[in-house]
Image 1 (tube, one colour):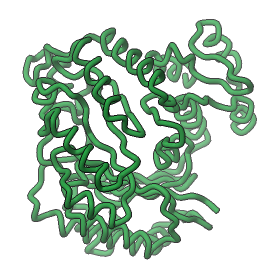
Image 2 (spheres, one colour):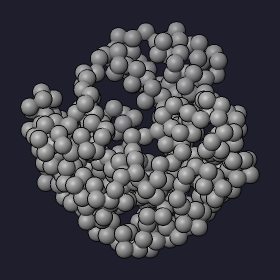
Image 3 (spheres, rainbow, N blue to C red):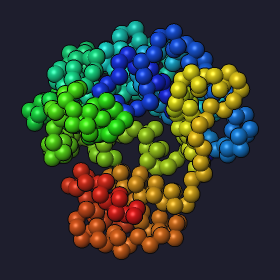
Image 4 (cartoon, rainbow, N blue to C red):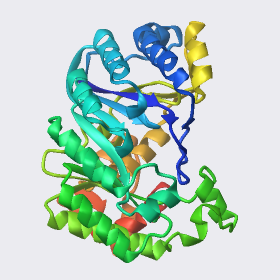
Amino acid sequence: MTRLGVYVQVPFCRTKCTYCNFHTGVFSQELYEPYVRAVCLEIVKFPRLLRENEIADVPDTVVDTVYFGGGTPSLLEPASLAQIIEAIRAAFPAQFEEVTLEADPETISHEKAAAWREAGINRISMGVQSFNDAELRAAGRMHRRADVFKSAEILREAGFGNLSFDLIAGLPHQTDRSWEDSVEQLLRLRPEHVSIYMMEIDEGSRLGLEVLQSGDRYSAKSIPSDDSMANYYEHGCRRLAAAGYEHYEISNWGLPGFESRHNLKYWRREPYFGFGAGAHSFNGSQRWANAHDPAAYADSLLRGRFPVEQLEMVSQGQALEEELFLGLRQLAGIDLKRIEEKYGARLRPRVQDLLAQGLVEWDGPRLRLAPERLTVSNEVFVYLLE
């Protein structure tokens, strides 16, 4: 039986972080309830919508993971989250093992935490980003250091035994000292899972665009250098390893048994269905994405239409690229022989070059990125996929 993941996109935020390049925004709370109704409608109509649009369903499935991402899903009323979870149970065979809710620290309360548990949510992914108030202010975050400690206490008291914290390496005003302090405070709270993301500089965010245009808004002149960001990441790797966390994907660590089951589906190219504005889906041979605008998404459903704005068959070449890129992001690496045989690809000559440069290594029969060279992983991907 196929273990299916379900992703629910909640595109609402109270503010737009300066570094954010996601399709999210600040919307009136009056839109929240109609949006939830639209998501539930999409879930209920999903099998028919697939048939009508000649998209292959995934047979013999059971949903074992659900992930509420955003945006800030914790802005929704707990009853709305429970309503979506019940819609998933009604539409699919369900054996929920991991139900994750992304939450910002300032949105967490005793009442909400208890209601989340009652609804079946058993994992909270908290957008901590930093424990330094100056960095948080510059990034446009609404919470402060004290809020993280308060929220963690609330969640533990509510019975949550699976917490994930995010940190960002490369925030404006970040220094060696402030980064080391953020890592130490995170370890003090000891979440079961940790994600460390490197700051992305691109035109999709206000901060990224300002940096590319050599401006000084959003503290753009205070972003650490690329070398500093790499040093922060490597320091995080060392401290987390010493604290007993297993590094299982370039940006992710977990205490033993606490890897993100849902996100592993993405990296292993397993099927998942996404619901909500901008959500993506993959059935093993096709990928599709919903309309990003929440109003257009809801309007399509109310008119009985599939709210998809992108749909493509995944070619053999694309599948090979995904196997290499997503597989090598995992610290366990890839079965190179299996991939070469499956796709008829001849990768050994390029692999030999990478081995000679110390960028990859063999771990038994599996090929993986050299642990000490993870910060240059993109160079490896580009070279292999040329």
